[in-house]
Length: 169
Image (tube, rainbow, N blue to C red; front, top):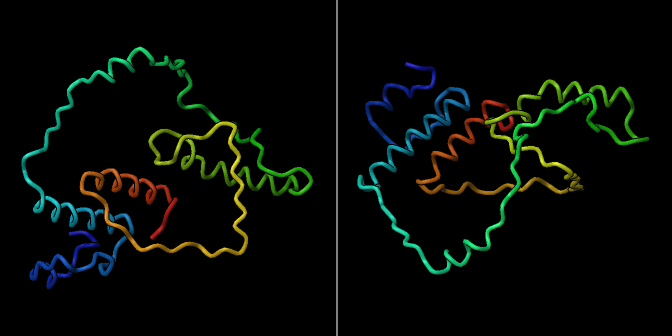
């Protein structure tokens, strides 16, 4: 019996249309409950027999095999980052105190953006992203359904983002 379990009257009715967000709990627990509810519904809708696809070789594949390019071996797949030498300010605009504060923030949140398997993309080398959105309002889009075969991947990604505090509900 967890904090997020639905009230007894809901359990007795077994109503699948009860929204998870009405139950008092953490966003991570809400995600887990909603995932369980969706998977239960998807399991009922899907066949128990897995689909098997067979792709036979083609002439095109044998032609392309000769045109393959060998990629160089990547030795440093998880590079380390020295925050002390990172370029965190703009010359002439930021003060040394502001740069020190920014480095402290980066150190505090190091586990979010550096490391393996933390749902954050790998750092892009040599890429600068500076988007000036001006006074534009954030875009609010309605929620979209996720294909059943992708739901596990989406669940894992959202779970990691919630655990790391990159998103909030």
